[in-house]
Structure formats: C-alpha cells, structure tokens
Amino acid sequence: MFYNARRAMKPEKSASPHPQPVDALVWPRFSGVPTFMRLPHIPRAEELDIAILGIPFDGGTTYRPGARFGPRNIRVQSAMIRPWNPVLEVNPFQKWRIADFGDLSVNPLSIEDTYGRITDQLSEVLRAKARPVSVGGDHSILLPILRAVHRFEGPVGLVQLDAHGDTWGGYFGSPHSHGTPVRYAVEEGLIAEGCGLQVGLRGQVYSDGDFEFARKHRIQIVTADELHRHGSGPVKRLARKLRNLPVYLTLDIDVVDPAFAPGTGTPQVGGLSSAQVLDLLHCFQGLQLVGCDLVEVSPPYDSGEITSLLAANLLFELLCLF
Ligand code: MN
Ligand code: MN
Image 1 (tube, rainbow, N blue to C red):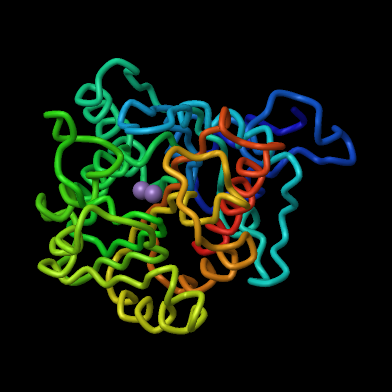
Image 2: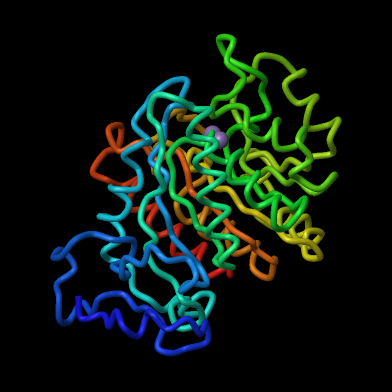
C-alpha cells in the first residue's frame, strides 16, 4: 500500500530496498487485501529472488478435498508473521527480494492440463532466476513443479516431509493423484539417484511391498516413530549428505499430527507436534535449496484455522532456510 512500486520495477536484483511486509504500525494486521505475509503482490519473477505463489489445485485428492482453498486461507493466517527469526537469526526479507507472486492458473477439471500449466508457468519463474515457494493445493502438484525444476537444474535431491511416501501407482485407472508424484519423479529421472530423503512416514499401508519402490531406488526414510524415539539427529546426518547438490524440499502438512493440523486431506495419527516440525525444518539449514512447497492444507476440514496458521509459520521458516 505504501510500497513503492517504482522501486520494485528496477531490474537490478541487488537494488535496495527489497519488498517488505506492510508496516503493521501503519496498517493493522487485519486490514487490507491479504497476501502472503503482507508482502506486496509482484507477479513479475524477474524482480524477485524468491516468488511465493499459490497453486490452488486439489484434483489429485483421493479422500477429503478442499486443498484448493489452501493458498487463500494461508494468506489470511500469515498476517501475524513478523520478519525476524530469532532462532535462525535471519530476516529473509532483508536478505532476498521476496513477494507474493499470486496464484498460478490451474484447470480444476483436468489434472493433465493443470500439470502442463504448472510446468510452463513455473519454468518462466525459474528462467527469471527466481526460486519458487509454492503453496498448494494437494501433493499432486509436486510432479509438474519438479519437471520444471529439472529443466534448469537437472536431477535434484528431494527432501519430503510427509506421513506418506507418495510412491504409489495409479488410482481408478488414472496414473496421477496426490499419492503418486514421487514415484513418477523418480521414474522420470527428476531426482538424483540415492538423493531422496523422506521424513515422518507412518501409519498403515497395504503391505510391506509398499516400501519396495523406496528400497529399490535407495530413498532414505526416517519414520515418525524413529523421530519420536531418537529426535532429529538422524535427519540432520542424512541431510548433510545432500549438501553438494541442488535440493528441492516438499512439505506435506500431514507430516504433522491431526491434533495440530486437522485441516488436511488424508490425516494420520502419531505425527509431529508443531514444535517438532519447526525444529525438524532447522535440520535443512545450509542446503542449496532451489525451491520448496507446502501442500495439503484443506481449510474446510480445519478447526479454528490452526492448520492454516501453522502452515503460514512453516512457510516463513522455509523462507529462512534460503
Ligand atoms: Mn501425506
Ligand atoms: Mn504427500
């Protein structure tokens, strides 16, 4: 609102000042048009180092729908975010040029068409050398995002925080759903061999064969049970092995226990607390992040908006990892 649009037009990436959240001492946090963290809306990737963008698509959902409303509600709940992270000692808005890029165009009636749209639009963002922080949407959006990333980075390391491995095959005769993106990403060579790390997996599966794909492709798994028993130390050690290549991080909110994040499509008990997931994210400091996403927030199933509030805070933590 008081943001100087002309300054933001400067093509020089190092130009200062960076876009900043609206001053809460001038405009109260509950006022104005909601954007992520009250940042300016700048739909021009060439002006940004990091583009926070919404992907409101939930056509890959197999159980409880509603993640299409995730970006909008997380924007509203992000109004309380303040810029300084006292744990990581960083203000990401001073360090990088970050803004709300707006939402990508999706087709709610076609997953194939949506996949093409996401890959094309994300490619434009990456071509402009902005790193995408995408807000879903269900987890099916991961595959077209990784396809775009692959165009510019080649195979990347993948860090996935999730209750589920998402390495299943098709569903009802359709190849793609929110339970399949990691399988296709591996099969299409988008993830570097032996450089996948899944954290927080738990709950019932169809059979032990469900883990066969991960074993075959040397995807490292740290289960929620192991996290509860041993803390985040083992994750830190595995994350260190990914330091020498570009890494993409994907955060499925259902890695968090439904007591803390009920607003999601496929809830699974025995998950992490809010505090645990915040701590877990700090394990990934120092990685060469080329992008990340936060998916599977379904506001219609939320309670007191706690899931969207947590998601907004996790988004901020993700920004602090760059
Ligand atoms: Mn999941
Ligand atoms: Mn998932």
